[in-house]
Image 1 (cartoon, rainbow, N blue to C red):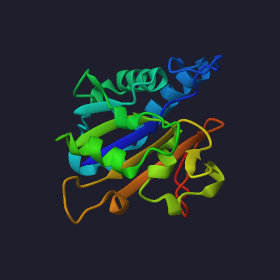
Image 2 (spheres, helix red, strand yellow; image 1 turned 180 degrees about the vertical axis):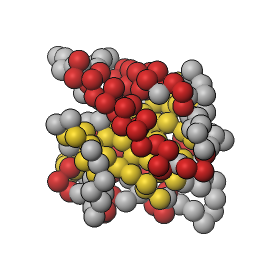
Image 3 (cartoon, rainbow, N blue to C red; image 1 turned 60 degrees about the vertical axis):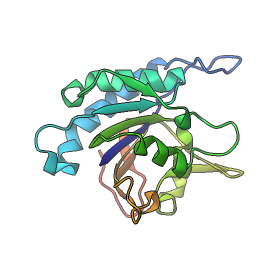
Length: 196
């Protein structure tokens, strides 16, 4: 299974901060940049799927900024999308206390039987990455026991075998993890410089 996980793009600053925060204009531009980046490199990372890479399932946090990011991204890469449905997963919501956990991600992935899945989450994805220790700390902030990416959007492509007793999320293969920084894609996996 291939899992593409992206964090929501920049959202409007509203007071009081509440669940309904739509994407800002910058956020919308950044989702377009993410889709362009995906279109440019995805076949390099999933060659065995040939010309067609279909997201059979799209799952998202129920927060507006994640849903909007997922919709805009899926529309822009529609040649790779085999569904028009976005399923909401409570496990992917931003946590008031603590992080998104590996257990949250695995429980969502265990509920699917798709070969390629798209997840849209929040910046606390950093704490649930299989290779947290291998990520460049310059792009991660720790607040107590919570880890967040510094910047958005971040996207990562992970190869994972769910429902396998000997294959755990921590052992999943992270094929790429990039962050958009001043219109440049930066690899945030240590010892990797592949980006544009």
